[in-house]
Amino acid sequence: MVDGIKPNDTVVLAYSGGLDTSIIIPWLKENYGVGVVAFVADVGQGDDLAKVREKALQSGAQDVVIKDLREEFLTHYAFPMLKSQAIYENVYLLGTAIARPLIAKHLAQVAQEVGATAVSHGATGKGNDQVRFELGVMAWAPDLKVIAPWREWTITGRNEAMAYAQAHKIPVSATPASPYSRDQNLWHISHEGGTLEDPGTRTPQDVYTWTTDPTKAPDTPEWVRIGFEKGVPVSINGIPHRPVELMEAVNRLGAKHGIGRITMVENRLVGMKSRGVYETPGGTILYAAHQGLTSVTWDRETMAFAQSVAQRMARLIYDGLWFSSLRESLMAFVENANAVVSGDCELMLYKGMATVHAENSPFSLYSEDLATFDGGQYDHRDAEGFIHLFGLPLRVRYHLLHNRGER
Image (tube, rainbow, N blue to C red; front, side, top):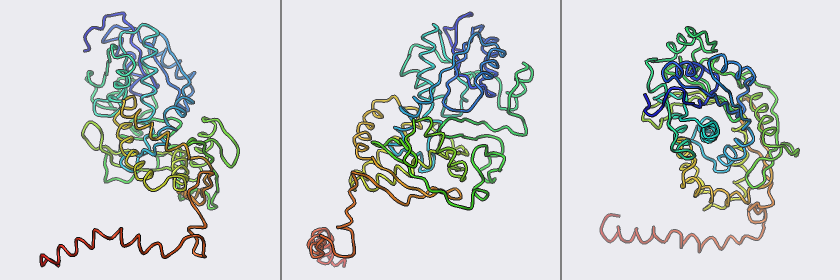
């Protein structure tokens, strides 16, 4: 039990309406005697928020606060991550991880507004989200206490959680036949648990809820042109879109063509490996388009350094350190590098693949006159001196080894 929390204090719960947070409301009331305010962050999970509100009240919440954070999520979190090209372990596009700092920030702010003593969340003691939520709260309201029921209660797993919900007459979508834990927002949907916990078992088709099976996707490729301004996607096929509208549109395109499905075993921050299935249809398209555009606007050294920054950014985002000074410092480089990432990129969407075929930018460093095989300004004779100098260390090393009898 967390010390310093008195009966009748207020606790703000990060509430989704899923299995874990649904049973936390009565559990908090039974075990702490507190009033519970449910905070719902709308990050594009597609839920009927009126029903989510009603469910929270029926479960015992004294109030429900709902915030539409979709545009803030894309503008200040997902799109900056896109500009950094962060990909965790070269596979995961960080859909859950990038939403957590935003939710934690507003969770802390709501707690301050209602005069709460503590906040609570439904993240398990085995996972990454407990770290992400709590570091986010520390960054915005470090004096708030945190109640993490999964680290306190005697419930040991999802089957027992379902039994608790049934005993308290709380309807939940999870069942023993479909025990998957899911998290969805405008960027992706994740699936964990159940048969997925065996890495030797193929991903069952009933796991997927968003994207078309690539084998059943349209037999005709679809071409799409994504426009960018300073690294931010702003248009589709020449038509400008606001962030939420654009994201919804590329999600529809990606889902239609079965794009963005991955199954991976990842290294969790807490030390264990876990297996997850992710669907990121629109995000996969945007990453491919952004990388296509940087291929013509970034020079070799900028691109090489950006790749190292992307790896570090991915770790910071995955580990819940979005609000760290290092992340903010790295973003200064990301913003400067993306100042030239304007223009558009054309992709072909087909059977689970988003492949880049053309790029156009007013900041393109590509010179057809230099690159052409048919004449142009380039003087082939210049290469001889360059090769001599570039290979000079090899010549010096040869003579050293030869004189020592090693060559």
